[in-house]
Image (cartoon, rainbow, N blue to C red; front, side, top):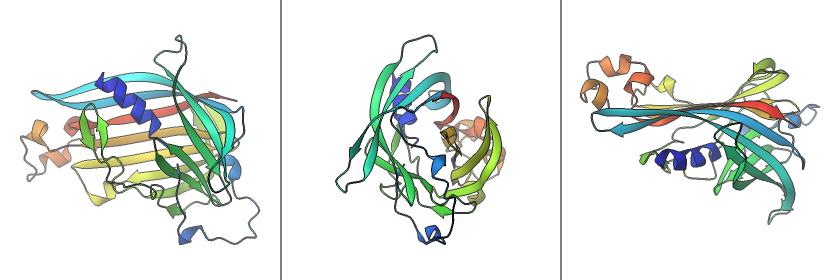
Length: 263
């Protein structure tokens, strides 16, 4: 039951809004702002295959549970917010097998203006892209909520969004994702704290958007350890730090989401 509750939250989290920083101020002579990396119109839909691994503290060690879920998001309608901005109403469905019927999970909204593309879900607003799309651009995609807020994973709390900083790694690059080929893809690094040499917390998050399609890939590594299970709590001799995260993780999750069809 804990895993079921978690996945409904987790698949929802992934997601957009924010006010841009100075790095967003660009020459207005730019012709291609990359708006079509985040296309929005009623009738569009995306289906994803999502593989998840949950790490759960247990008596005598760490319980690890893996499972697959299928997600479909469909743009059903438009509405206006209190500022007059157009929001696209998206219905999210899920199923545990591609032979089972879809079940409605929740409703969220997407929006896009000249500066940014956003997603609002579970009262969290994320900025997923800023325009013009350009390699090296950075922003605080989680600026509209407290990044220290806890997220529950299998009954345990983790600070999922701690230290996130969004950055466009590359743009306009061909890629094959989930068996689908795309001519132009932009890769956004949402978080990567490995350069901080933090061996007790791993925050690694990446998203890829295909031109004319939208979100095509997402990967998350949100893992914590106290080095208790692997090393008896010893964090001094370097043993815990030298182990791969798959061996020292005590709570958190890994997730991989791939686009399998769209219209």
